[in-house]
Amino acid sequence: MLTIGDLSRKTGVKIPTIRYYEQMGLLDAAERSEGNQRRYAAPERERLSFIKHARELGLTIEAIRELIDLSAHPERPCEEADRIAAEQLTAVREKIEKLRRLEKELKRIATRCAGDQIKDCYVIRALAHHEMCESDH
Amino acid sequence: MLTIGDLSRKTGVKIPTIRYYEQMGLLDAAERSEGNQRRYAAPERERLSFIKHARELGLTIEAIRELIDLSAHPERPCEEADRIAAEQLTAVREKIEKLRRLEKELKRIATRCAGDQIKDCYVIRALAHHEMCESDH
DNA sequence: TGGCCAATCTCTAGTCACTATAGAAAATGA
DNA sequence: TCATTTTCTATAGTGACTAGAGATTGGCCA
Ligand SMILES: [Zn+2]
Ligand SMILES: [Zn+2]
Ligand SMILES: [Zn+2]
Ligand SMILES: [Zn+2]
Image 1: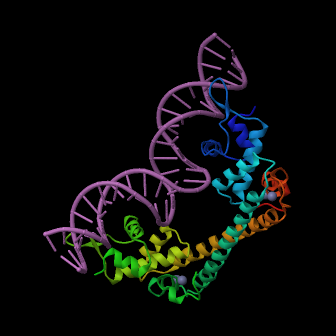
Image 2: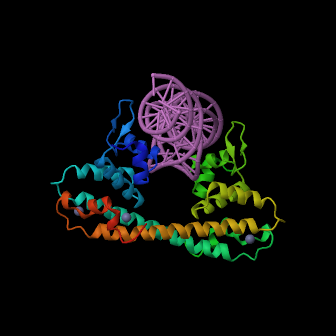
């Protein structure tokens, strides 16, 4: 059995985060030692690795909760799980698009300043006037 | 003089957000009517447009506060302002890079599933095992 | 077995940039 | 004048943690 510190070291998830996941219902309430400390075995470690990986890929706690619920029913069709992954892909692509638009404008704003006094600073003027932008963002 | 509602409609910034910006010190404490309601004129409107545009470009409240402070000293050199813009550009580019890595893995995860039962679902398995990923992310 | 210190416990509050709500007061229009 | 709309303050909630206080517990060495 692993202590919460052991589990933390093995998975790379910080101790308070593990307790947070338990509170959020992503991890089942852990077994306890006589002195009320959490003890973990292999299945909890696997579950935590799943959560960690899903979080690294940007899934929300809510989406992860749904996936965990689905995992409890191995015979059911997996459409829901596939949909969650597809939606996350779409969300990431939208974020990239938004950021690319920002990058375009910021590149202009950050590189065009002659760099003299504040009162002539291109950065300050460009931030004050969206009309100077090449497109919406 | 504009009421807070007028200002909100003209700038597209929601009323509670305007009050929040005041509380955060981005907007000076507004003049008040006899009945204690906020009243705004052109300079406050320009300031708010500046804040809005900067926020749309992803700058933090803290960065915007610095830029506003700088604007109060028109004779000073503008290096600081230029640096803030450059840092934001860098931050945006880093975010794009991270998201691109996520997109790569998510694309694989979201499109490879044959789509039968949960127990065979590629999505679930791929989330459980980072080793299946093509690279770090 | 005692003592010590690291690890763990619970609970609360803080982060960021808002957003939502409640209940009271002010402004507006018919 | 009265009803409706707008505004006021203050507080709490969002998401996903992170940080701290103060109290217990665990493991190790003598
Ligand atoms: Zn400049
Ligand atoms: Zn713009
Ligand atoms: Zn599937
Ligand atoms: Zn991975």
